[in-house]
Amino acid sequence: MTGIASRAQLRMSFLRYALVTIPLVLLLGTLSGRASGNGYGNPWFDALVKPEAMPPGWVFAAVWTLLYIWLGLVLAMILHARGAERRVQALALFLAQLLLNFAWSPVFFVFREVATGLTMIAAMIVLSVAATWLIARIRKAAALLMLPYIAWLCFAAYLNYQIVVLNPGADALVPSEGSADILI
Image: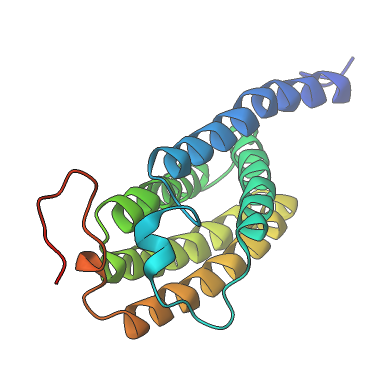
């Protein structure tokens, strides 16, 4: 054997990463949303005026599940690319946008900060585009997996912007459970 590792060994190394990163990203994304009471069924969210383009709840669940699986694959590809130039920077940008992604649901649904949520999505888009640019120099397939995510973030930014416009004072729309607020 002339190489350090065979193709089969390299493939197994990648699979070990993927067996950790895919469930981890999917789990953290799901927990972030569930713990925040995101989406339809949340009394505050249900009371908001929504844009015409707002898809039904099942679409969000299906799309985010697929995107989190792909993001887990991207993370595995970045981690597997040991020795690649700019790997550390790509990983840092990728993780920064992912942390913002996980933080968005609590900010939007728990704290009802719709304008802050929009700012966070804008930051996610910028970080994701920068990360994708670096990732493309490491693994083209990983960069391609980022493109639907960036497109969905742009759509989410549009929806979030419309919610900001259509719902001035959205944070006070419905009192929290256990609130002493009296509606008149």
